Image (cartoon, rainbow, N blue to C red; front, top):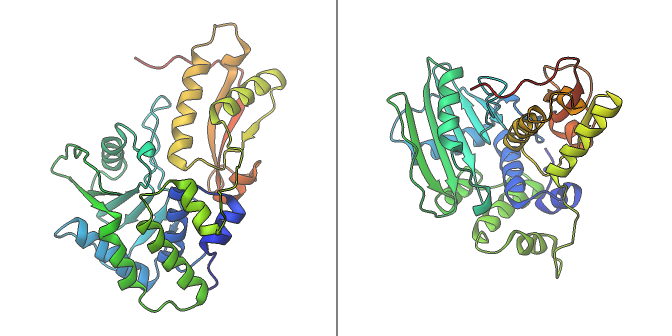
Length: 309
């Protein structure tokens, strides 16, 4: 397989450092192109070896076996329409075990309450499984979430994981795979510099290119107003957000709509997540076509109810 190299990925999608590292690592684990979000896939032999070693670094027991399902952007829907839900970056699924992995490279992406919610939702949707959660970050001091007997939590650093990459892929099968392995290891070495400096380093530019970022809040407000006016379903193109971000933005939009005056036409606009695997139809945005999920607005005759107490 020909891999998309770090430079090619940044040129094509202008992804953030955190998203770039996730995408590149996923293609290595699967030995396949980056999949649609929340798709259960088979890991390659080298990918299984990497995951096994990462699990051993996280926990002293409990590896569920080499026959597993790997998921990038693992959706855990909220238990009600009011609840945000969550989407760990990775999940490894066995018959009686669920291992979630959350990847962080930037301080700004740490979200309060994120880890406990993942554990709670994991238990809710997999009540008969052992629930494990690995938090993979640069060095940081952060209290571990409280774990019930059915759950385990581990915090490991990218610096600890870097040797596992070299061990699992000691002799890359192609120049493009070598570029991905070397690019990931280099990114770990350069986590101390800013994302803009890292991007410039990968692209071998003197300065990182200035790109217009999508203001997700403004885009959401605009979509709600347009849908309230013309009653046409529409998607919001948000290429810089991951699935966890989309789940959070959906709830924020819902709460804002529900807080409008009872007679406001905005009260009839319901935000929801389109999923290519379950919702039918085709994506309405470029980012939706890329990852298989997109945030949409639809008009309903019944108003959005206030949040349940």
